Image 1 (tube, rainbow, N blue to C red):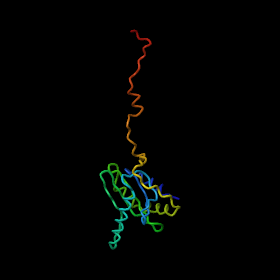
Image 2: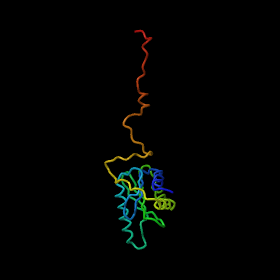
Image 3: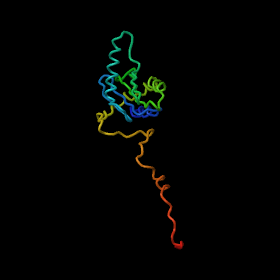
Image 4: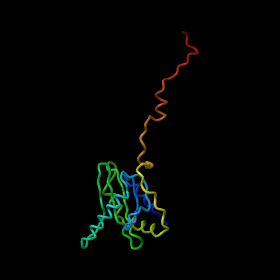
Length: 171
């Protein structure tokens, strides 16, 4: 049986992906998340829920996805279409400089992704993650190594002056 975490980790394999989460569309509660987001995910999910509600009033129309752009990131939110189970919403945050927006939107619209999320929702409910705390720094994904404050140990060894032996030198 597939889990939300497995699906979210696969989404982080997309170029430039830094964060993904799945939320209950009815309540906005985050069911699982992976990665680091530059904004509070609950705020993005709440905004998407409001947009979906607004479009629900338009006869014969509805929300396919919501795309927010900032200076450094793309934020994509899409309702999950499933035959059964709770209504879900998927959120993906992308680094603008390293991502392919069209590929990410296609992936979020993929029926296979929606089927896997619906299958994960049918399983046992995971514990909701702790509320987002901006004071806590989350781990940086492997695709974005943390910047070094000092040179690597190998460079430090190469830059040391060579010692010369004084045992046989005549002064």
